[in-house]
Amino acid sequence: MVALCETWVQKLISLKSRSRGFHLITNELVQQVPEISRFTVGLAHIFIQHTSASLCINENADPDVRLDLDAYFEQHVPRNAPYRHSNEGPDDMPAHIKAVLLGSSVTVPLREGRFALGTWQGIYLGEHRDQGGARRLVVTLQGQYRP
Amino acid sequence: MVALCETWVQKLISLKSRSRGFHLITNELVQQVPEISRFTVGLAHIFIQHTSASLCINENADPDVRLDLDAYFEQHVPRNAPYRHSNEGPDDMPAHIKAVLLGSSVTVPLREGRFALGTWQGIYLGEHRDQGGARRLVVTLQGQYRP
Amino acid sequence: MVALCETWVQKLISLKSRSRGFHLITNELVQQVPEISRFTVGLAHIFIQHTSASLCINENADPDVRLDLDAYFEQHVPRNAPYRHSNEGPDDMPAHIKAVLLGSSVTVPLREGRFALGTWQGIYLGEHRDQGGARRLVVTLQGQYRP
Image 1: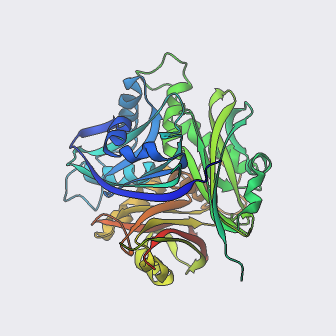
Image 2: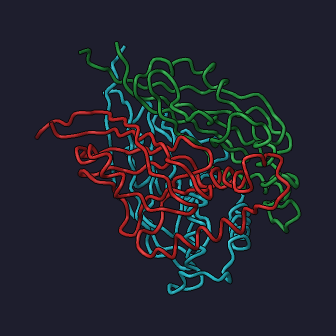
């Protein structure tokens, strides 16, 4: 039996600018954080340093799910409400609301060097501005590895 | 004074099939993950490997809260919207929307061998299909224990 | 090179009673949990032990964002729905719904002794009762420090 060691990895990464909607970023995360493959057991915490974009987890297959999610949030978080905070444009306050509804981080189990996602799960960036800029993430991995 | 040791426990567990609604699963988690009792200080991360069910925390006493939550989400995430993703039935796309609104995981502090929940808090499975199948969870415990 | 040590800190803290709305609590957390400054790399998990209040992350500058968020949730989680759970007043069941939409905890990266928040991000208490009491939080820090 080999004892397991503990470690932490924390990286600041950047996602390229995207237009409004939900974007599957699982592969991009794995490529930018190859250290995931070291962990036998652990957790990955992925945090977005912005207030008008979000992270969540949903279907990785049919892209229609992402279009329907965008349509739902566009309809249910209206642009034409009498917002006080309006000087950054009509998509700004709705983006803040979507960000708190969806959340600023996801935590995903790590297992045998991979995200322990279900078969149909992927990690989404929710871009809530019509045209967001590049988005900064802080990815924190912790757990055990075989030395 | 006794030094504390650190450890990780990660288990894949299954919850039985349930009908649509919010279901209190705190006791079932404690029974399936008795290792919780070992931890003096730590965190429990509970993750659902599905895209049409969710986990959240709310009232553990009056079951009417769970019925009212279900009614709210049925009304505010409509079935009859013109969804593109519709081939798995009218309850499917609403289930994906509810899952992103509520989230795929909860993290609960561990303290003296127990979930450090408030007096009125319990852990809920949100089953968002009319009849979901068994649901797989990945439970990851980490923290300190007295050896 | 100096090896890093690992540690855990877990504290129960209390936030003073506030009226309904979103309240910026970042500075109050830093003051009540000065141990944050010890961590070189880590995570802070902040958990609220109540079912009618929540924690989330959003804009730390313009207070109008917090007023608009409150207005959005007041409008979209109505008081006058035919709730079964109504014996604690018309603001109670809406508070439970808002709590599950927004969540019971936030996890924030720690880096060089500080919350690794974005420039515009702050941590919010969502008080969803018209007049909540004092609110108990469990703050769990873990990570590495230079001894």
